[in-house]
Amino acid sequence: MADYKITLLKGDGIGPEIVNQAVKVLDKAGEKFGFSVEYDEALLGGCAIDATGVPLPDETVAKCKASDSVLLGAVGGPKWDTLPGNIRPEAGLLGIRGALGLFANLRPSVIFGPLKSASPIKDEIIGGNLDIMIVRELTGGIYFGERGRKEVDGQPAAWDTEMYTVAEIERIARVAFDLAMKRNKKLTSVDKANVLESSRLWRETVIKVSKDYPEVELNHLYVDNCAMQLVRNPGQFDVIVTSNIFGDILSDEASMIAGSIGMLASASLAGEKFGLYEPIHGSAPDIAGLGIANPLATILSVAMMLRYSLDQGKAADAIEAAVAKVLETYRTPDIYEDGMTKVSCEEMGDLVCKAL
Image (cartoon, rainbow, N blue to C red; front, top):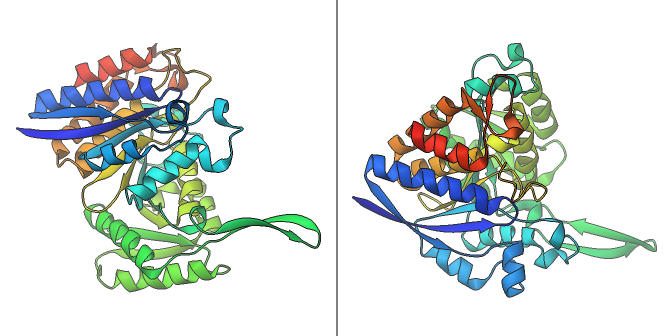
């Protein structure tokens, strides 16, 4: 019987509520598929600031490094919005990614059959079931580059630096090519090589790596065209690989094509196995404590954890099938439609466990 150690970073807002339901589902999957999970909790974000004065305590990093995987809820909220940028909850999120070397962010954009009508894109444009995997570089680029303030012609000005090394581009490209090999062998690399020197290096490096993957069909799109094509014809995409800032924007666009940001999971990987898993939505402080949050993105993040970090692919498939089954009848308020049965956050977790 396999035993795993998972660090829980419940975070702020609805984070504790949704993580609790995901843990319940993970335990049920363990019962069904013959593995056990030991949990350790740590602080990240606003709750860490309140308790320790910093958004990412050293103890949190140590606990995460000692575990097989990490499950994160959400961080942030208006309570901490007036703090300086370097000690806001979001700084903890960037910090944990850097501290754990989580350079590859995987964001699937998938439409579950029962939720197809929730997409703002017409059914005839979506066509069959949407299934896109966006691979975003997570620890480089403009979010981690040099920045500052200065005066230009007597006016305040600010600057941020976009920079990538060949090694950073190569490693994220290989993650994307490896995923494409396991899917439909089609990869789209997104850049702005007509304007940005960093994007020209990006494109050159991706083409170089492609020589090791002759079975994968590689094409390139400028980021503005990709944003348009995602709305015009999302079915043309399988795996998309791009930089930190472009991936941040495009993955949120793709999430809305899928119908609800409350349904989408993500994985942030440090290589072959170790990863941090989280829903892509925020902490939703306006509904925290009301029991109406949608836990499905966090539950689906657990499925990704089982698939990519814990070698429990059958359990991952079972959780995803259970979510699809439950959605045929039951909905949390954010995805509710007439004719469905409205349920709470906890009831949704119970229903997925029952379907398992």
